[in-house]
Amino acid sequence: MKRIYIIIATLIVAASLGIFLLNRKSHAPAHNTTTHAHHTAAAQTDVQTPPTFDMQQYSLTDPTSPWVIVNKQRPLSPKTYSPSDLVVPSIPLRSNITSTEQYVRKQTATALEAMVAAAKQAGITLNLQSGYRSYNFQVTLYNRYVQQQGQAVADTQSARPGYSEHQTGFAADLGGTSQPSCNVEACFGDTPEGKWLAAHASEYGFIIRYPADRDSTTGYVYEPWHVRYVGTELAAEMRAKGVATLEDFFGTGNAASY
Ligand SMILES: [Zn+2]
Image (cartoon, rainbow, N blue to C red; front, top):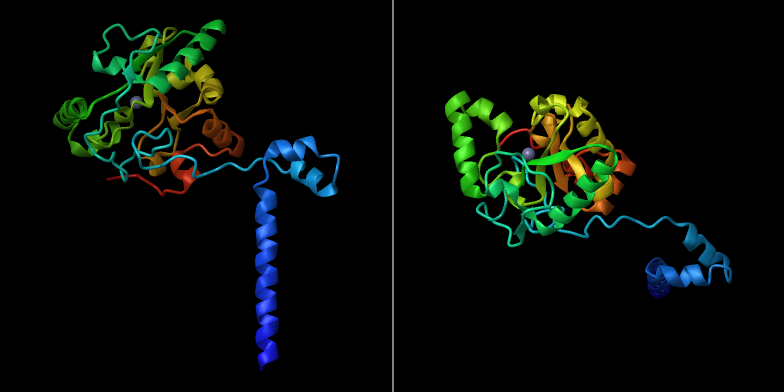
């Protein structure tokens, strides 16, 4: 009997050592393996391994995180959250835009400025229709929708206060100049501005947050004008994998309703 225990103990030690060595190898800094790639066969294998995407790099719940997921199942925490670094981006603004909607977070502003400048180079003029919306602004907006259309219809078009991505400062509704009547309408997706945005938003760290026919997942119908800043790394990864929604990418579940 004693011999069996010794064999089991030996196996456990051997397995632990194996796991330890494997971990060491996978955590080895990339520049080491690149520099010494020609030295050993093992190092060459490392060089060929594509870098893995770190799914836990940023919080999905912290409202200051560029990866925060806000939907009908995931309100902001706290619901009255307000970003501390709101600025007005140096891009064209809708002529009658309200004072609060001109703002977005600093990171969002920098990315918007780069994207709108690149669009301009391609002969496309984008403007900001709506950026940041405070909790109180959303109270007024949502109540107006409810009064006009009833709560059921209002919930498909306007977020309840504390549930709007616009409150994070990472979201922006963009419009164009070629067909102003399509601004903040589904037909924006067919305009040159909408097409350019769909093709290039990810290069600047944005996703089209509410793709067509995905309301059972996101809770909203197609909004080709609503972009969400998530950073270039995540936007590129979602595009490469062909995953259109944050809910699907991170597996947080459907958010069709409250
Ligand atoms: Zn929007």
